[in-house]
Length: 156
Image 1: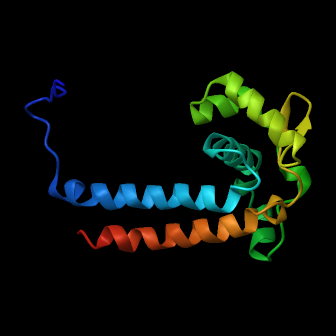
Image 2: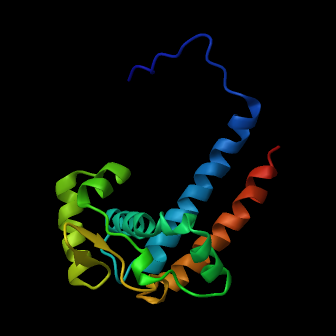
């Protein structure tokens, strides 16, 4: 097999060389967190990615609202009326997955109660962190992400 051509002026910094493998290991831990905590409820990694994309998109606007941030600081969920619907097309664009794949997998997520169909889009149900195994997933995800900077800093 022929090696890929490389520009002569392309330089890989020593820091990047040292951090490449730990960064990949962190990514794999995150993927493992998704598959371990959602395995029984979500059918595969693509479905999990679609669900996470919908969950993020439905609250992204609310996360810029100081009143919503105050509610979160007080331990309250994001109000139902602050969550928006998102189209399947937007999810396909944000994930890079084919629209038909997104359409099929969202249909399953709606059927299983992970998402709510509303107009031309979907959204998460009220306080989704308490649904299915989402709380376990979020706890493990945050734990892994909080550890990541220290793991990378070892190679500075």
